[in-house]
Image (cartoon, rainbow, N blue to C red):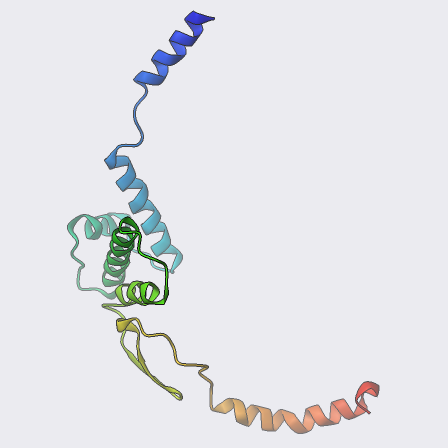
Length: 152
């Protein structure tokens, strides 16, 4: 029994350590790359790895989006190390980093907002044609509802 324990202990002590910095960086980069792909981007992994390792985006919009994701991740890591609270200002700061190079000012019927600064959308944005659609449907709905016993 003791011999089995010593053999098992020796095997445990000589196993490769998977908690090395290289492995942790690989797992982090793989997580970020898969997150980026979930957004519908088809950036090759080598280019994504190059952006993360050098910290410099190329001139395409997709690589700038990958760079912004990387910058947002670094910001989150720093704030987590400082034990900053998760509040509205933190969410705005992360949003600003994610949209820094690809966001911009947007004008809607309820006002303007700038996604590159971390601004949120203003209220409900609506399509002006919706009012026309409601006015067209309204007589039809009234006719149908009049025929239903629960509306009489």
